[in-house]
Length: 395
Image 1 (tube, rainbow, N blue to C red):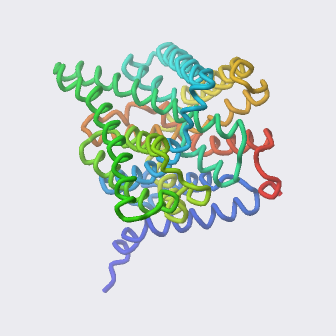
Image 2 (cartoon, rainbow, N blue to C red):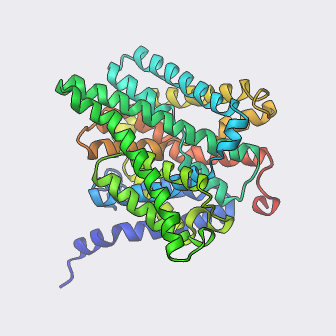
Image 3 (cartoon, helix red, strand yellow):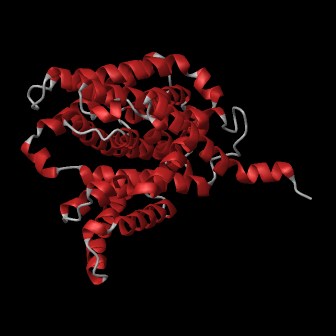
């Protein structure tokens, strides 16, 4: 006899992913809204702590799948970073550092004024520095957007991710030192994790061209090869409790540096990337609890507004010296609104290595939920207002 509750639990994730995809296609076709906002809404509503359609998502297997999905997108982000452009126009890097540092200071001051613990305030400030390149690049690819705002949003969000990971690892190292008193363990949690993750990414970027030459395959026809390499790299860093974020970004960056260039049709890894994208955004939203979102909604709202204001202010203030108009500076800052995917996966990865910080961040849960739904929409609007979306996509 069929055990109906068990059957429903077993097929819940595939069923919800299919449902999210269907609703996303409908919303995109009728309203031109980013699909990922719809995926997030479905994941949040059907989460174990909301309508309880989905089983608990914080298993090691689901976290690994989500990290693989994130890794594929981060590889593409790293691959699209143009180091020659950054060297020719150092103001892009200066803009990233400026707005990241200002965001850290403002969010930290607000959190301390709100009488949050110092460690919580530091971690909240470091994570608020980042934008989510996963959401930004999915919106850009989905709408075929191209131009200064699109490229700057990708470059700035990727640089912000790197800065945020470095700062977060340092703060987590201090947290481990305060709680355990073991300096060696604290150093491992920060410096060694960062160095080892970057080295693994570099090694993979060196191995792949050699493998493709041995197999007599062109780097221009290697979508599956690079996808499998990203899956292997993320699985390895996940098992070793390193940083899949830094490893995947480094792999993409050095692959481009070694002339392994993917053509336009390979961006996003095709159908495989689309499938993992649905899973990723449903998983991230399903990881949020309404209880935490509700309890931290006021401070979370303040963090979202102040973070976005700082980003827009910084990109606008430095727009002329970096070579764009002040209007495009505003649109660039607005395009960097997405936050949640990066934040949730970094926190879940921290829990995976034995440091549970997730439950301390009610304000961040509220901010993540808001940016999961509205961040991609703000990115889409900024690209549309800057006229970087082709007319056939808008019509």
